[in-house]
Structure formats: C-alpha cells, structure tokens
Image (cartoon, rainbow, N blue to C red; front, side, top):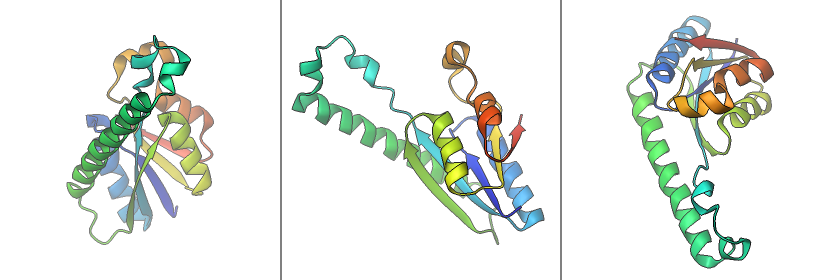
Length: 151
C-alpha cells in the first residue's frame, strides 16, 4: 500500500481517522495526503432571488468572499490537525478543494490512484446525514479503492 487518502472535516471522527492513517502509513511505508473539502453551502441563502439578481456583481462578490473565507478557515483547520499528528519520517501532503465532499473524495482517490481511503464514520453535519445520507457510506459504495472507516 503506497498511497493513503485521509479526508479531514474537523470532526473527532476524522481526527481519529488521521491518527489511524499515520500509524498505518508508518507500518506500511505509505505516503499520506490529507484532504479537506470546502462545501459550497451558501447557495440556499440566495434561493429567493431572481436569476437576474443572482448574476449581478454583488452576488458574485459575496459568493466569492464566502468561498474564500470558508477555504481559509478549512485550510487553517487542516493545518492544525496535521500539525497535531506525529508524521515524522512520513511523506505527507495537504489538499483543499471545493465541492461536494463525497464526489471530491471519490474523484481525488481515483485521479490520484490511491490504494486506501481512511476516514471517520461521521462528520460534523448530522442533519444533512439524516436527509441526504452518510458521506462515508457513499464513499464506501463508490470508492475505486479500499476504505477503512474509523470510529
């Protein structure tokens, strides 16, 4: 096993997964990439505006600012989590992307030819999980590689 992908969302479960992945990588000589997905969740705020209003410069500027702030916050969170791990001697990388967490995790695993995904069993959003389903379950169902779910 050469490459491990570890999605991090700041939850306790994702931190536990990161710790497990580090131990696994040390035992197998694997490299690890820590992935954070910035979910574009601001669209619903503007749902009641007309299509014309949504294309205006104010909307686009606000949207870009929200995405930028979320990306900066997610990057800081990822840095903090990775810094707290004992990655001495390991080849590690960090990636921050925007989009749907499930799709980005599966696509990153496929495009990067990862051998394993190590992720937490539950993230930060229980309400979304109730209506849409678990990101972890969807990743297990559609992943191009093995998936280790950590509780």
